[in-house]
Length: 473
Image (cartoon, rainbow, N blue to C red; front, side):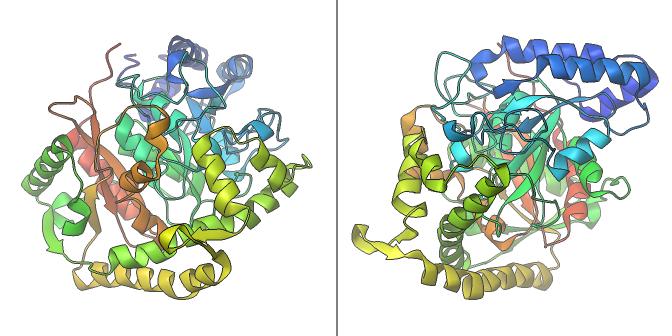
């Protein structure tokens, strides 16, 4: 098997056919993980546990299971029984859950072999993956699969880097404002942010119950659909007929683009049109205003109560204040100490405002208005989705400055609105930049509950865009 081109589907098929063993696939994945220690992709690599599980599968495993014997990775804020679940923060370094999160239970039941827990932006509060609490390489920060000097994106940084670097073909991340889509875009892999509530959220260190969801990340959209089917049930998704697909473009989502991203996105639109996709321009003039009224107020206010509840679940005896005291990354420390713990939000002229009334208005008024805006744009224009560049720029240098508020706002510019509305979005790799030679992604956001339709379109687009070349070392 060509590991650089291997997909989850191909690995599962090879295991069913007996042309490869789980032990061989798992050993190769572990060897690649260790050879790529400079990526900082893993917080915990479970070599002994993974090899034992692979050997057991080869001996007595059910070869008909959809992920039987296939190695995958799990972000380190999702609980895996017997492995530490740090959420990328020192205070939880020694927390070892006794049970799998429900999403992990589904993957194990499907036969998946978990090789380790992937690194992440600390407490999932960022887009750079520049985490100063954990590293396996010489430098801090999860590194880009295509260029070790650059960010892997966040917050599901390690899962994105591990898939982009061809260590595994799939795994799980979580997404609050772009966290499975940003690292997938920057590392050249595919992902789904499901409709909020589609996946069970128990056993996952939270930011915001209104906005959080686990999400699958993988080599191809077909692999993402496979992971989604394992978690949610139902029949396999067939590719959509692209001649029956209508997609909208919102011009305000095409701002702040670098040249490589703009060129690749426009070329991708032309390729989709050539396959029969109908593309129409639509306007959402209230999008930025409504999104601004929802995003930070909801995430920063809910982060306190949701984390207090999660810490109680862990049984560690940790308080949120004790957790905050040990935060290593300055950007996350500042957010927790300045906003989350005191229950404040930024106001005009560097003032701080009481978060509760702003949060109440966000949940009761602004978020329903944002959801209504999306519903109307989809219905009035008979759209399957709207499309935009997942991130406005290719990966930037990995250093403390990569975690500035300006970079945070820039990289979630297009992913955040759909997150706040709770609608599904898929990220598809479309090209390596003409100048940068770095991965560029395209996102499709669809109506709430239309995850399978989006996946069907994504699977059809796998054939249009193909897979990006593997990184060269």
